[in-house]
Length: 75
Image (cartoon, rainbow, N blue to C red):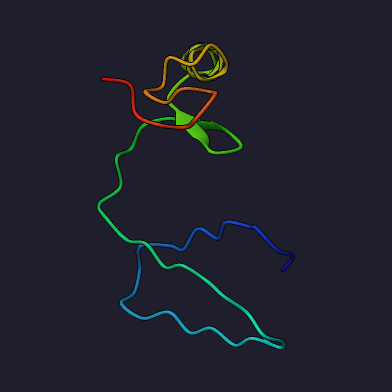
């Protein structure tokens, strides 16, 4: 496995075993499946390509709650 990969596990068990062959960091997340389509690009995860494009455009135009100049929340 190479860096920055996502692994999906089946829902047929209650344990996960990992073995690293070199220094590694990992994050394990769990939850109930939402059973909806997902589309992702970089840090953006949406349900449709249209929603993904809209989110990227909003980010690029500074509408995500942060100023592009100083990364502070806009109030």
